[in-house]
Image (cartoon, rainbow, N blue to C red; front, side):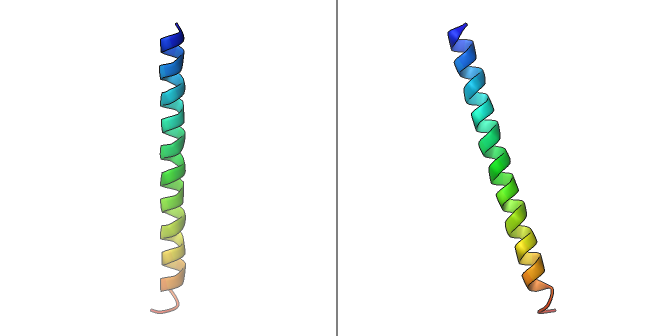
Length: 40
């Protein structure tokens, strides 16, 4: 049981880090779009 709980906790943490990474990527893309719009 302890091993399963540790495995699920690790999976949750990895999923959260993946979500944070994807959110950061989206934010950078939005910033790039906003900064590139006035140039065009």
